[in-house]
Image 1 (spheres, rainbow, N blue to C red):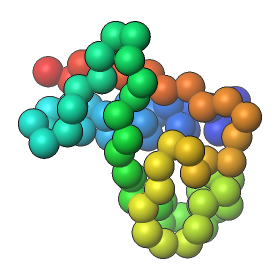
Image 2: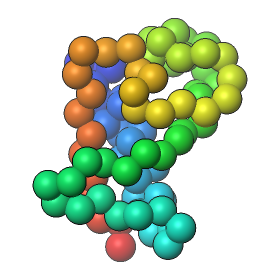
Image 3: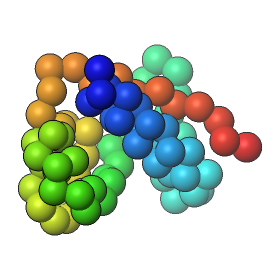
Length: 76
């Protein structure tokens, strides 16, 4: 549950920023989520928990989990 809460919070915060940037397409209902990259967390425990390398960027597909739930909400 901790993993799920962390991923939802992180993705929600980032997608609020990504959606406001006109260089990134907004998700459309019924369509696949556009690809976007996030910075790898600086905390080694968070990196290990998500199964990510120590540095760089990652996409949703890089998270080591059977299921990743993404909640997208408006921050306007």
